[in-house]
Every structure is written in structure tokens, then in C-alpha cells.
Image 1 (spheres, helix red, strand yellow):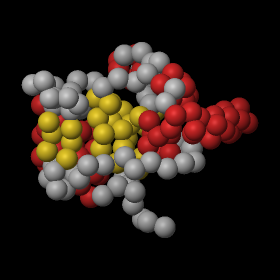
Image 2 (cartoon, helix red, strand yellow; image 1 turned 60 degrees about the vertical axis):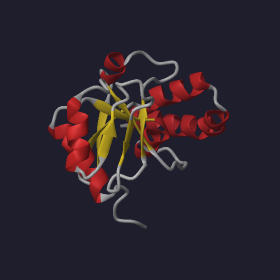
Image 3 (cartoon, one colour; image 1 turned 120 degrees about the vertical axis):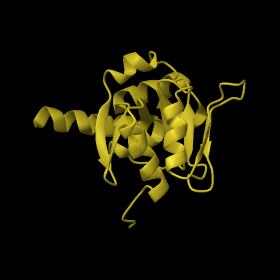
Image 4 (cartoon, helix red, strand yellow; image 1 turned 180 degrees about the vertical axis):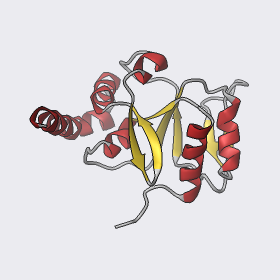
Length: 158
């Protein structure tokens, strides 16, 4: 089993976002996995409060990567470069959910590889996947709902 799930550059980027005060959340399946759901994903979905925030680019640069905000008609915003690779996906909207500010109000934090990461709560990830109704989301919903039931049961017992 790997000691880390994040590369050095990914840890640096996420830590830099936190240090610079950039509001973001890890969402989607990557957020669900961190909260204990079973499954797999190849990417880490990030939802930023403001994709035009210059501090995102500063954090990417500090990690050896690049940031293209999409603010010049390029869509969607992208993170990459040799150090950061292509594992981060930038999300600009979550199906079935409120705006960033209303969802951020219920964000929960987990520490992953020594980095404090804000997560969209699993219940809201489930709500979004249900609303998106994509085939790949429907296929994983049962596992996510099972994880949510276990978390709810543990919280009720504790």
C-alpha cells in the first residue's frame, strides 16, 4: 500500500491554496473516497469559489505547475504542467446543489498526507451525483449511499 495518495507537487499545491486563503473544495468521487466511500477515480475534482482568483495560479506555480483560469474564453479552467500533471479537474458547477458559498458553509475538513483539505460533505456529493444522472454516477450511487448509511449509523452510535 502506498504511503501517500498525493504527489509532492499535489501536496504543495493544496497546502499553498490553504496558506493563500483560496476557498475551494474537493468534490465528486475523490471527495467521497476521502470520506470513506469505496470505489475508484483517476482524478481529483476541485471546485473553486472564484476561478479568476490570481492566488490559484500563484499556488500552482509554487508547486511547479500552471493554471489557466479560462477567464479569456478558454473553457474549462485547467491545472497542469509537468509537476502537477493532469490529475486535478476543475469543476465550475455541481448538479443539484446550491452555489459555492452556500455549499461551502457545510464543508468539512480532513487531513490527507499532512494537508488540510476542505471536502464537500458526502451527503451533498450523493445529491449531486443523483441530480447529474450520468451513467457513471448512477453506477456508483449504491456504494455511496451505503457509505453514507454507515457514517450516519456511526454518528448516531457515537
